[in-house]
Image 1 (spheres, rainbow, N blue to C red):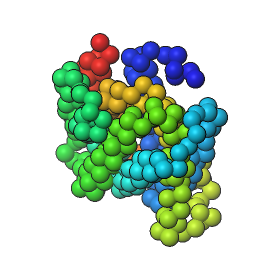
Image 2 (image 1 turned 90 degrees about the vertical axis):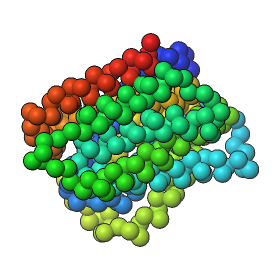
Image 3 (image 1 turned 180 degrees about the horizontal axis):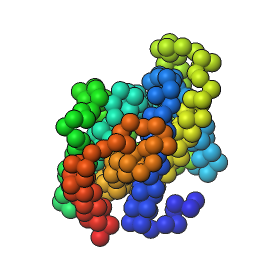
Length: 300
């Protein structure tokens, strides 16, 4: 497997960075499908089926036989994933991308908190400092002009915070059980179970899938595929190399990247957040410097 041939320090920097870029771009694409009326539950359902299909290819990597008495482990991880996804898509649907994505960055500190509790692996002082720098940087990146208040701020924070907790537990448990199961067995099982859970969302659809407008399907399918590819990239890194805290610090750069993409190419997606006033630039610069400092602490 390609990942296994790469040094852990290099892998837990490069692959989370690639995943962060794919995530930020995918969030913009899915936001556009939401603006076209797809809705939270139909988005989650379609995305989970597409992502499960992509993760199925990992089964070809092989692995140890699946022990039925341990199937609760991928089941528990899948439940964390399912809750996190619902919360994530709710935050992206109701709020602004430049607010929702940075809130997800709280996962960095939560991973550092859960790692000693669930795995017993100590987190170094350097990584704790980097985690806090990331969160402060995310806060600065979230600053907006006073005359452009964020939409549905409370819902965005609650949903984003819930998603951050769920995804933090997800990451730590993947690191915990990944070596035993192997990437080619644990990850497909997780995402297959998650896809099965998604069928319960059909009863919450505002309209059948056939009612989705034709122009929304490319955005929905494209955003889902991007989310799937970034998930494979990031989660496989955790399962092979562990180091969930340091990987998440680098992955938190998706907050910075989402802001950059909204500013640079938001007009491609008719995203209303592209019109950010000049007053926010000092805060954005400070946030970017803090995020880069956190990543340097991880790399050095």
